[in-house]
Image (cartoon, rainbow, N blue to C red; front, side):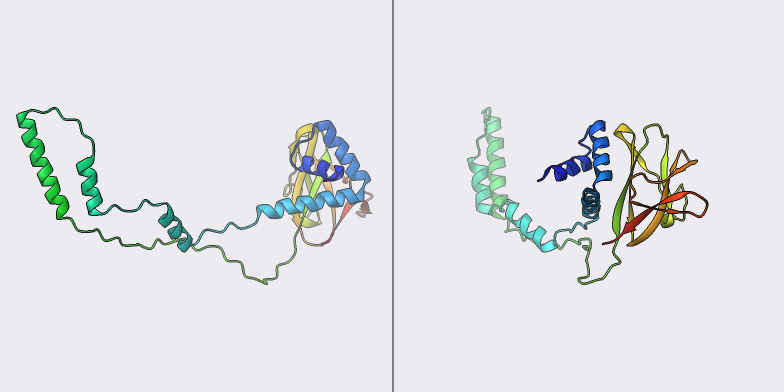
Length: 226
């Protein structure tokens, strides 16, 4: 693993100090190739979380239970175990007579027992999740937005992708005053701005493009492709 890949991995694992996170974001701002590699890894992590979990089949469970379940003892093995098991008794005449009666009754009862019939009862299992092979889905790209604002109380993003509503997509604060959000987007071109404390609108300082909004301000531009 190269040094840039190791740095990206440590950033995703929240393993960097606040100073190292700031240095990493500056490196991402200066290197478009590093920024694209970082966003690709963010997309892989987000897609991995959404992978389905499959339940084992009833046949697999029954075979597993058959292998780990102890084998049933025959009636003769049960009689032999009852006769040969070690017991400590205080012998007296009354006790000896009682024990003899119990032993005779036990032997007669065991001899009259028939081999038990084992019936397998099918267990209803919840239907497993089925994925249709070859089903075409509209591609989705997970984009991570990052803003360094140590003094902010709240940060959100407004743009073409959420109707320019500053309350729909809030960012989460992490160590060192870093604010982040990962949003799913379809391929396309989007304009957006960050909203600080619900009133201050600023363009993304890490954006590589910008366009005027027609009122004298500059919107950050995000090109999303596969």
